[in-house]
Length: 130
Image: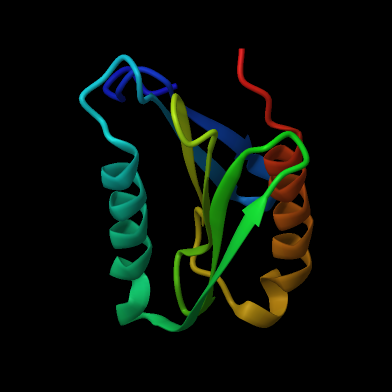
């Protein structure tokens, strides 16, 4: 964790793939953050990549344990190919962005991306709040 980062900002490093999943958590009950603001901020951060992205897709989801969110996939010459948020819609909010730490070529990175995407999807489906 970066000492300059806000509390509850974490990185999951994939050094063998030169990739990082950046995670940030907000407790919506103990902060000035409001769910609608967090959702709008997420969308703004994703669409900042539209300058380089050929396409951005959005997919809403609901997990078996009741969490909801949106997954964004970015296609083209972007540093991030996958972002999402997960929330219980009243107290907890997690946003994540998968970045490659090197310039990527879609053809050569696709197998790695698919592996990391599956890992992130597992995190989404199994996330429980304490």
